[in-house]
Length: 123
Image 1 (cartoon, one colour):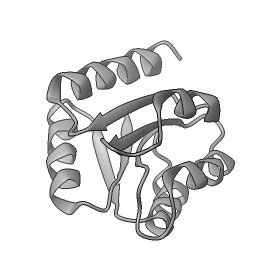
Image 2: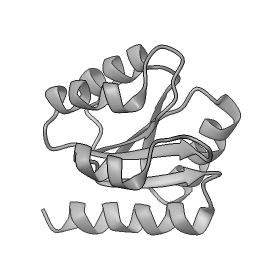
Image 3: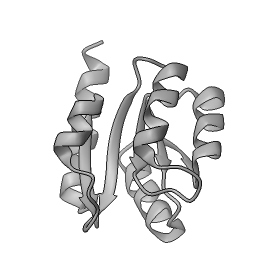
Image 4: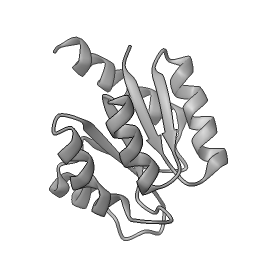
């Protein structure tokens, strides 16, 4: 089963998104900050990370290389709220697998999950 780590400090948004991901047949683990994210990456070894840009103890783009250090093959998808200066172009420059704006719409999330599933099946 494909495992996704969802990193977001907004509990309501994180829990709702986690339920949607689980309904699509993925295993989900969650973290609310950078420290939890790194711990879960080491312990759970997720296949993909949905990483919020604005976390209470670090920014997602600063956390990105540490996650890649733990697992260079992990797919990282940034999630950001509107009004931030973080752009899809910046995400690509960092090497992110994708980018989603908040609020995350179900159809966008499901399309991304399908992409992750296809990549995993082709390995």
